[in-house]
Image 1: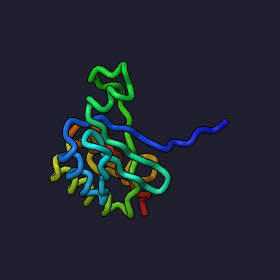
Image 2: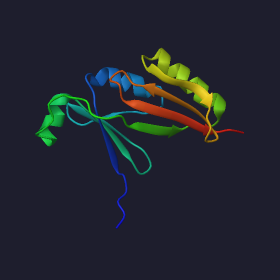
Image 3: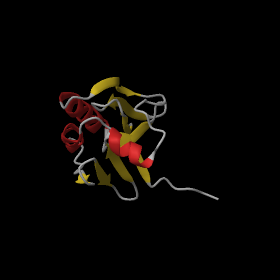
Image 4: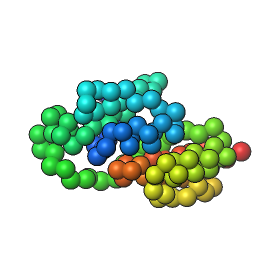
Length: 126
């Protein structure tokens, strides 16, 4: 049996700051009440939940952070990786891995959003 990823949930501390940050990727976050927002892509929803909303659907959530997941985003080309990285850094993102030509054949970078959620930016090398 195969299971498809349909939604990724990020716990965030400030929805307005999250909306502003992700707007630099062209994402318009739609409100889900006053404690959550979501972005719907082609086949995937990325949801952003305030801690008190996370506790509504996960009774064991106590505000701690778990492991490290990186959500990779396709960029048009290597220049787009660099430009997107710069735009997100200027928007309050924290650089984790500066753009580089990675061993796996892509221009790749990792940036943390203002709440520490990790985004990978990648494009095949020419």
